[in-house]
Length: 369
Length: 210
Image (cartoon, rainbow over all chains, first blue to last red; front, side):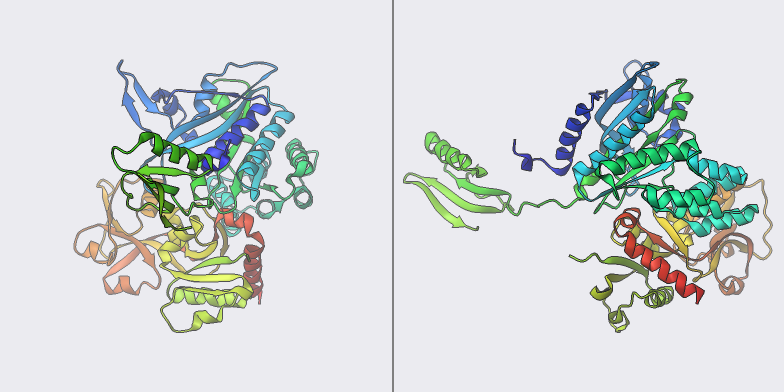
């Protein structure tokens, strides 16, 4: 199979699906529509409030899905000792920030739902790193643990409003902002500032954590270090980094959260985490972890742009010998050329060679390459 | 190919002050001082490229990755809420976002408050935090005349010295938030050009201590 034909996003989808299948994930296929009710109940979980809705023939209010995770959770039965492993490749409909209009976004992702243990977490984070690696060698996966960050914030004992401001400052690596909030509340923000400034692998982060009284006896610290060390051990050193500024809504997320970046793309392209709290909200007692890759951004990644639209344009006249034309085209395609048969040269088409079929045979009219 | 750090500077007096800080931090680019209409300047020796953009656009350049870092006022960051890192408070370009009204203004909480402003998002967030019902009138300039002509009850705008307000017979009623210039960075660039970004932050820190 000639992979060159595929665009960046198509190639990425192909490779990721192959990867997820290898680890025993099965594809989850869903319908384009979902009952609106599902999203209303969990509105804050969604990236944006805006949802395209319509009334079905039976009067039910339906929505074009803005998210896949909620549907997967809804349709997954709880199991005690096993884990449901599914991946998906679906379009979602969201309002894009720049244009304030709805956009169709292609998402690939996976979810692990059930009895989540350390191996499950490791596997999902590792697959996230591998997914990024498939797209580009130059990638970074930033990992944080909400338990650690929440623990430090909780220890400050500040007001609800102050906490909200702090969370925003953390996500912006805004140290002066953290100081301002802590000063206003009359607490010492030094530990939090240290936590937010540190960035790197286990060997860079562990000493800083210890300096603010968080050592391996803290189960969250131990878990984070274990998973990241395991990833560093399998070739992701310097690619997988600990960054406590990665933060998600604590109403839904707990434990591990992560975000992936590709050099040359200005936004994060992968985002995921553990969402046990969301599971509780929908009345399920098991755990869950997953991630999604936003493929619409891949368009921006430089690929080798084709200089020519087609290798050869072959001109023929109406009523010419069909056999002769077919022979000429087949011969060219057999030589690996792309060929466009036309009666006249189309406007705005760049070709390497222009040929013409007449009674005497094929004639070269123009050679550009 | 060498990695260059792309820096968006706000055009105008603030931008010149900011460039001086970069120069002091070891990222000089002598060609920027030439008096011409060029907008992009680079110094390959220092791995840095500067460009002048409209102050309110700096956040957009940085968020979208056309610039790796930039300097923008906190007012712009609060208004557009770009998804960027806010690495430093540069402590320059200081002013405040404030509510101002005619000297004899008396607020009647039973009526919807009419607010004229350029900063609709900041205004909306501020009044919703107070639970006050308002009608926002978005204007692009000369906000001060809105209350005088009865277009609005109050205005929300940047106040530096207060001279413009005084000359138009207005007074500050409430300060919403203090404003100053901030160093911001694109989140992705921070991962892949971290060394250069760190060098700028460290350079600024050292310059500040001196």
